[in-house]
Length: 158
Image (cartoon, rainbow, N blue to C red; front, side, top):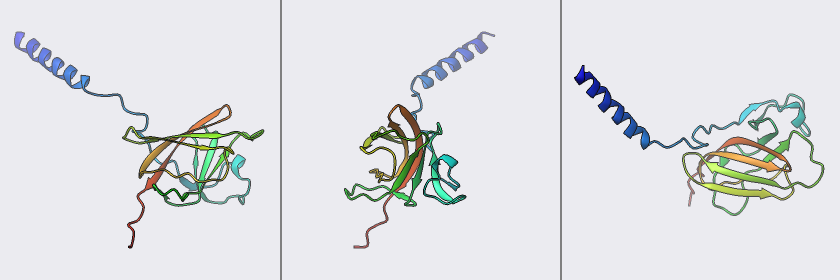
């Protein structure tokens, strides 16, 4: 009995020590691209034909949809814009409303900030490294998140 109690005590101590070194998972560890090919939500159809099957990512809270015109999205340090992404808010804007984007690269501490002074709509969304990026989008009093994958650029042929 004493041996069993000692064994349980040692096991509990080992588990406690191993758990002490564990960190909380980061918010982007479960990042998975939200881009799916399909019909847009009805509220985001302006400019598209009914039933159009397009790559789109609907925000986790359903307040915004992203339509990437480049597939796949390519990570780049190049200052020339590469990736056109249409961002359509569910609620119509009542005037100029800047869009702020906080992008977090999954599995790292990397954070990149972007801003579209004109707000949601057409524009580019370039990020510097390949991987899954969790985007927190804020415009006016609205906020939503979505996940987008960026791939490495193809090797140069020079």
